[in-house]
Structures are given as structure tokens and as C-alpha cells.
Image 1 (cartoon, helix red, strand yellow):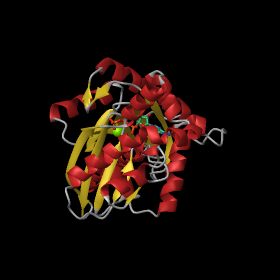
Image 2 (cartoon, rainbow, N blue to C red):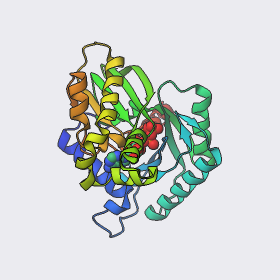
Image 3 (tube, rainbow, N blue to C red):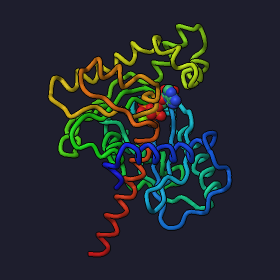
Length: 294
Ligand SMILES: Nc1ncnc2c1ncn2[C@@H]1O[C@H](COP(=O)(O)OP(=O)(O)OP(=O)(O)O)[C@@H](O)[C@H]1O
Ligand SMILES: [Mg+2]
């Protein structure tokens, strides 16, 4: 597994992932060669976005899809048909791009979601045409890539902030609370008197983020207070921020000032969790191989 790579390698890896998942960021438009060998797939059903990530046999990102879809709320699938349709379309687009059929995937769930709902997530993946071969909780997925030994991973997504405390490389405590990128967009929409959709776009425009910082700062502080409450005075080795909302510049500084705990954020935090889910697929496949070999 990749975990524990240096910061520079992590940035390069995540930049490559964004290039293959967000075609608008694609620097090189010449078609990539068809990947050989096993493919590892992560399907992330978030509250704001659905993500599909494909890694090759060396765990390098080869393709993916990122699509706005409000089909999940607090880890619960609220629009089953919508989720299946979107996921199937995403799978088919990726298959066309890479010239390979995807057959299996791993998926994930936020900490604390009831098992029945976790199964609903697996059903969506299966109904979209992928054998769901593994399910992993989101912070453990993120840590497949980050390799944190001691500290907190905080995944600030669309609807919620997930927090996991890690000791000796294992998640020892996790929680999920409502506050995420959606709340950033809501305060921007209110402050500027624009629609939620317009605010969502404005928020992601690099040039606007400096101007909007004072507007969204209280939401960042709310994330800091959520983290503080869960850390509850325990000495921890630092905070790593991931998730789409953590893309907003200045977030790590605000959380660090609020919590008094050293906070960092990978250069491109958007796809850390979905990539970690695909890595879980790779791990499940390796375990299966070992079982056969016995
Ligand atoms: N460049 C960016 N700058 C600021 N915010 C961004 C950027 N890119 C994405 N976001 C925000 O990140 C949020 C989505 O993040 P992510 O894809 O991690 O969420 P999710 O997995 O769908 O939600 P959750 O984890 O809460 O279920 C959205 O609110 C989106 O507007
Ligand atoms: Mg998420």
C-alpha cells in the first residue's frame, strides 16, 4: 500500500488522480494506453458527490468520475434509483475511456451508520453492475493512502465532517457530524443573495476564494469545534484534513488555530477517501489470492 509516502509524492499522486478523474484538469489529451492486469475500483457514495476511482495493478490512478448527486444523506441512500442510474452511467463512461470492463468494486460508509444502511450502499454498487467485494469505513479508507500512525483524520465532505482518531495505525474512535461544504455554500448564498447552485460554483472558483474566506471562516471554525469536542483534550499527533470542503484555502490554519493542534492538509484532498476505497479493493483481492494459495 502507498501509505506513508512523502508529502511530495503524495501531492504528485493526488494531482495525477485529479487529472484522470476531472477531465477538465487533464493536461494531456492524448488517449492513455489500455491498462493491463487487475483493476481496483472505489465507489464512494457521498452526500454531495458520487465518485468512482480506478487504480491499476500498481495502485496508480487511471480513470474516474466525480458527479454532483444528492442521493445520499448522512450515509443513508435516500434516492436508490437515482444512485444506481448515476453510478451505472459513471461506470460506463469510465469503461469507454479506458477500454476495459469493470466488474468489481469496494465501497464505504461513514462511521456509525447502521449495518442495514451499509448494505443499501452495497446494493447500489451491485445494481450498477459491480460486484461489491468489500466495504470499509471512510476514515480507514483515507488512511490506506495517508498512512497516519497517530493523529486525527478529519474528512470534511459535502454534508458531514467525519473524524477518526488513529493510534498505532488503527482507527480507535470515530464520529460523523453535520457540517461540510454544503454549509459553506449556504452561507455564501446568503451573504451574496445568490442561489445555492451559484454559490457552489463560486466557492470552487480559485480567484474568488480569497474574497469569500471571511464569509466561510465561521463554518471552518465550526469544523474546528467539532474536532475539539471529539479529541476532548487527548494528546494527539496532529490533524490531517481531507475531503472536498478541505480544498478551500486557509482551512488547515483555521482548524489549527481553533484546536491548538498542528493541522495539515494534502495539496489535493478531494479524492483521498475514494482512492483509499479502491485500495481496500486491492487489499481484499490480495487476501483472496493468499487464501487460494494456502
Ligand atoms: N475546489 C474546491 N473548493 C472548495 N470546495 C470544494 C472544492 N471542490 C469540491 N468542494 C466541495 O466539497 C464538497 C464535496 O466534498 P466530497 O466529495 O468529499 O463530499 P461527499 O463525499 O459527497 O460528502 P460526505 O463525505 O459529506 O458524504 C462539496 O461541498 C463541494 O462544493
Ligand atoms: Mg465523502
